[in-house]
Image 1 (cartoon, rainbow, N blue to C red):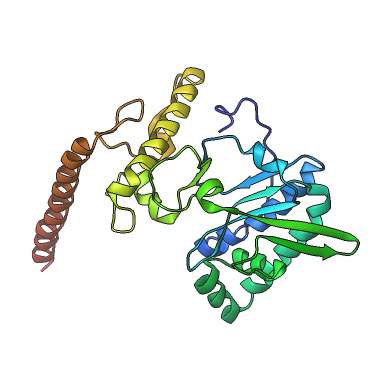
Image 2 (image 1 turned 120 degrees about the vertical axis):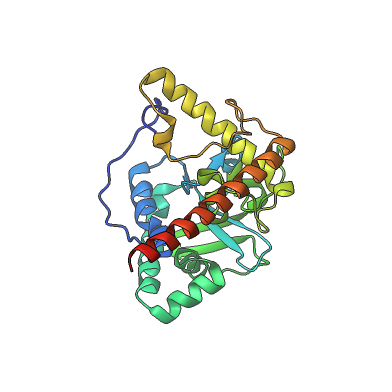
Length: 278
């Protein structure tokens, strides 16, 4: 990342984060509290690591708010993968409270399970508890001492697209959540929840962006090996991130045949090993 982002400043941290996926994701409130403290008066866009920014986010800061978060019309109504912070200096106490309530939920097994079920994560549950979230409300007033914060909603479809959908100009941040990971990094097939028809454009957008970044790194570091990135590139994806439905169909045949041969090999050699051991 440092080789690619020659205009970015990286801040060293030493937080001991959990190995449990749900807990680890929710403990990002530690990092974001730190980011708000470091920002002073500079506006922030706090992003999960599996998001992709494709457009200008700055125009959303023209609206009057202190903290912005994204909502959607689904069972889990909010997603904390994108948070806008227009006034970091005034918002520090909010992020401190958010972190404290997240940890409190983490330490309460019953409320922890409820948080995962209702909000998809303990940090998201803590957030909705702090602001008193209601689906029909778009702006919230949260008061700490003599500071009143305006917390505003933005649509996930624009600032935090968590669904598998065709790529559109209005969406400026795409969020490749958990169900994407096997497809993006392991070269896995599309699934019922991530169907090819709906997901293909988002997949190509990711690959095009990824390979563009890799090509820039290669120019700077001649000995760079793309395999070190831990991303498998299917043969139907070209060097510039393009692909076709027809190419994917051939890949499906190859992929399933390869899986079958591996399974068959394990059965054959496993059986021989079992016989020889007697």
